[in-house]
Length: 277
Ligand SMILES: Nc1ncnc2c1ncn2[C@@H]1O[C@H](COP(=O)(O)OP(=O)(O)OP(=O)(O)O)[C@@H](O)[C@H]1O
Image (cartoon, rainbow, N blue to C red; front, side, top):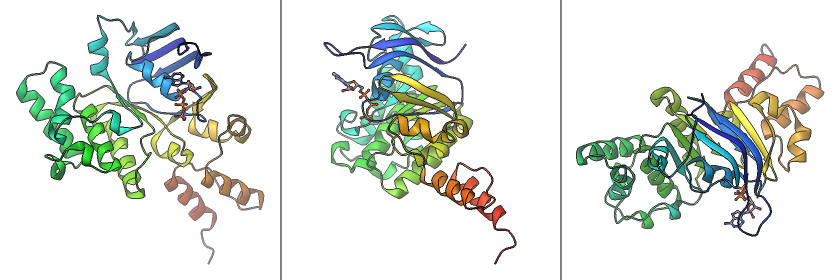
């Protein structure tokens, strides 16, 4: 049984054609999954179903094999934590500390546990210096860290990140990649994220869902998806820049092996140019 699964998930906003059309999505324990797709493909709408914010028009969302119902909604929200695209929608308390405490306190945990969780989440996201600041006065990147900390303080089994790098500076992106990549091993967490930055996908994901107009156009491990430039073009996406470069150098006769993350690509170049001045 999977932690999270959608079966034939279809959803239409009121008086609109379906935004999701028969989506089958599976997330296993410790998986790192990217959901990519052009604007309006349905990524956020899919994510809003994963913890019961939206209810399917038809089809099912299963958490540990159980459909989401009113009775288990609280339990589901404990297990599936979602960080939305715009941090302004998710910060509202007078201080950072209180903001992070909101989620765990709402789960009905005792004060000492809440305090402990808030402290660990602040440590994880390096938020100590900001603890008494009003979150709505923070920069976009700082707010993002606060919202992630607030979700992590609920200790979810699945962390869903909608466009996690939107509004982050390059250092912020690098920090986020490093941090998020520790979560599966450290806490057994599953990470699901959406992005328009395809260069980010191999750094953060092992498996990819490509969405197009409300449906899953393709899915597979990173190499399987990135070796299909036609699929990416058809779905209004583009092959990442490092892959484009490797492809044209191979066509020019450079014997480059495979590589998807920056480190793998660097190793492939070193290997190809070994012994050359
Ligand atoms: N609240 C809403 N009411 C009506 N239609 C909506 C609403 N939210 C989204 N839609 C529509 O549903 C479709 C899917 O939108 P969604 O936000 O899920 O796409 P997305 O893949 O997350 O896009 P983006 O990359 O732009 O964030 C779009 O056609 C959008 O116009």
